[in-house]
Image (tube, rainbow, N blue to C red; front, top):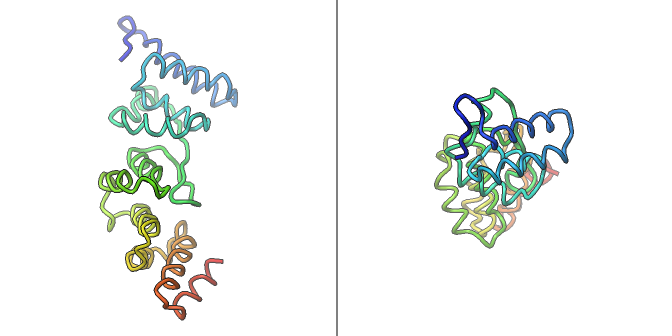
Amino acid sequence: MDVGTQGSPAPAELAWLRAVDAYTVGAYPQAEEEFRAAVRLDPSMADAWLGLHALRADTSIALLRMHRHRDRFGEMRARHRRTLNSWYWLGWWVQPVLETGRDLLLAHASHWLDGRHVAELDQALAGCPPVDTDPQVRFLHACRAYLVKDWDQLVRHTEPLLGDPVLGIEAGLFGGMARGRLEMYGQAEPLLSAAL
């Protein structure tokens, strides 16, 4: 980590502070330049990667770097009592806020939902909270079931989410499609109609 003289912030930290100030007032090109300077000086500064992610600059790289340095995620925000967040795709349509360590774990898992990285997805899901304790984690498991065409598992994961105010519509679509694949057409039609 970049260390300044005693009592003064390090150059990377100063760049981060300038970046957050610029971001806050909508000076996005300056914010991006300062966040990039911060990660150049301190590549493990997760909150600088968060800033780049919030600016939609190299989002995949920024997310992977945040996750790699997740032990420092929130460090700068806490130290300087500054707010900064981003958003990510949970599945293919839901956009939650990316702000906490839990959010970062879910964003990292969701990153692998492209069908070509099931092993990476499984590893990322293993690092998330238990499926029975978090509806968004359950939803990610439903997305995984959809990718691998495990229709029974998709039905099991979407059923408890049907009434969820954020995830319910997508859960209904997934649950309806899964029931259609399982030739349970009488159960599929009302779910799909309600979701559409």
